[in-house]
Length: 327
Ligand SMILES: [Fe+2]
Ligand SMILES: [Fe+2]
Ligand SMILES: [Fe+2]
Image 1 (cartoon, helix red, strand yellow):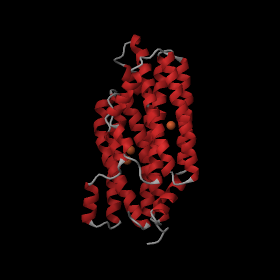
Image 2 (cartoon, protein in one colour):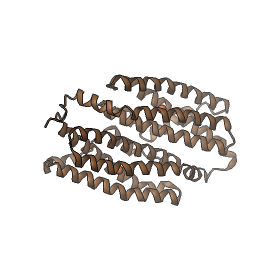
Image 3 (spheres, helix red, strand yellow):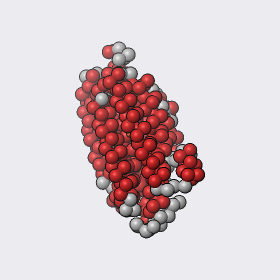
Image 4 (cartoon, protein in one colour):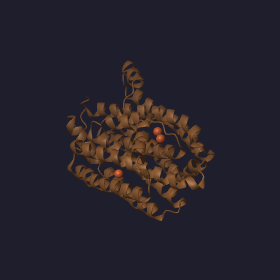
């Protein structure tokens, strides 16, 4: 593990470079799955931006005088662990694509937030500057995606006949249930690697909430007369997305955990937003109200995790024995 704060900056930049390379692959594939020209267009636009991110991060690594042989080795190797597995999952519908992409943009956003903090500690102004500029573009892409949730629902439901809409609501409910199950696992593990009492409390509180969400979703599915096998099917769909592998590879530092948890909350935010919209189209007010209520708690959890980014960076540097600012 790199021990100086400057080596940490290089290490964060290397992970981010990997994340951007994976993002590029996603942006190139996304328009085919988007199912709508407007949606495809925002992915193409962000593909260009992402090319710029990859280039600027690579240049920054070169400017930091990373040895060419080492650089080549790092760039060729996939770093970033869980982040990269996440990028490799394969959404199959416009709705899932948008939820996944929304989450991924927030993972990038978190990665830049963390890089900014480490680079600030290192007194590395050019890296801070590059990271701030890219962060703004990731944030904007996240917003653009959120503005297109309705378009994504339209595209996903285009082939669905009105009498099958109810079955779709059940499917979205079952998917939400499977996601909550993963959330519970993640948050249980998070207790041990939180690295900071404030963040640990956030994870603990949200673990309680997630258990409650899972129960409420299951109840709702039962009330709607969903098939008993629906939950199992959803767990399998989630596995097929490669998210299973992603969850098994644990983030290894408090900072990576916080970034990962933040991204995960955004997967849930998008999922509940989509569920609410599909339920509304089916005239199921109770489900859309429930989705709105849970979605709010996911947003609050995400904001609380972001509030812990400083503490997460502190804890990570402390764990690694990095001395602040020392070259
Ligand atoms: Fe990016
Ligand atoms: Fe991005
Ligand atoms: Fe959550």
